[in-house]
Length: 500
Ligand code: HEM
Image (cartoon, rainbow, N blue to C red; front, side, top):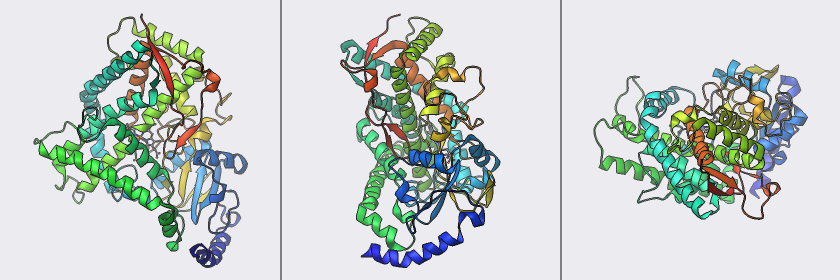
């Protein structure tokens, strides 16, 4: 009944909007013809990055879609990405206000989903100082090396008995162990109120909640509101958020119990010192929502992308024994024999590892659509008009496989990066795993150090084989995820200790 009523009321309105905004009249980008009310929703399949990719092959690298009544422009070429993220960075660095992002960011008091403005700038500055600054990275070095020892010990145990290892599980524990100690000051390996297994479940659940489109955002009137309640989306999202909020409160309460003045040993301690106190920049004050918003960012943005990158790297290496052999030889030759511990200095030494990681980022960018942005002014890109308040998505999955940028784009060939200056720091628009411009990832250096450290430990000390009876052709490459796209079937391999 409500669908029928909504259709009756919205049909004339949407026809009017569609006519008024017809692409040819306003020089808007081309795109597939949508249906009244739902727009292009019916043309989207399971994964947005793949749906956008397939549609862009037909409609071009700058493509206009409608999610319900919300215009969305998708950019799928290096040139278009450069115009968006470099030429028009300032005008495109808004974030759309969605119901899920509002909830998980504590009303946009975080960094990831905050609107471009004072709060975002101040929070980015603060977190930059307390978590990402070179000074902090030096202090945190021992935490990363301790966690890498723990990883080594776990894998050595499995290698002694030649037991199958679920790499996703050990690498999650390694990455989350580091990030949560740096940010929350908590060692979740030894925590009495939550274990690593539950933390992993919560990270994945929260990412799914944030990455799932809520219908409320794309349909005016109460129709979307009603559908989200009937479909269970609203209650799933709120239940997930409530679990997360309880965890954050627990961590904060623990800090308050043992609060020491001027304790900057982790991000939460540092923020608790300045909470509700006036800051240097006048009107801005850190509140508990800012603190929890940033904790939510660390939870959602800090852990999984790195784990996913290591898993895809190990998957591609297992599928390409030539590259695996060459990489392990390069690592072992460069680092020498009988090394008791991999250190962060080692990370800088193995050039071929860097090429392998670049190639993994090209084929499997963990967040293939980066994060949605919102235009804050009317702009023109590749000759098309993009009006203010348009949601925009940059499809790095398409760009990474574009034959105009890469020869044999579907093949895993790390050597393609030899003798090129292409890196992933946001200056080369054919390779953008961390985005580019003002909204690019501030955790890039920390994230890549963890990825390199994890992979070096796996590949220096151990050789890896598929379980008995499994061939390379049996490795499943299906994907799963919403914000971050991971390997669907766990990668399980058998380690054996390599003796040098
Ligand atoms: C391999 C690891 C990582 C990858 C591939 C990655 C990727 C990304 C991407 C694609 C974006 C969106 C950029 C855009 O919208 O243009 C992003 C944003 C962000 N990332 Fe990362 N990230 C990683 C690690 C981390 C870590 C370790 C942290 C923090 C602990 C972090 C914190 C953030 C934050 C706060 C933002 C939001 C920036 C803003 O909107 O201003 N990331 N990341």
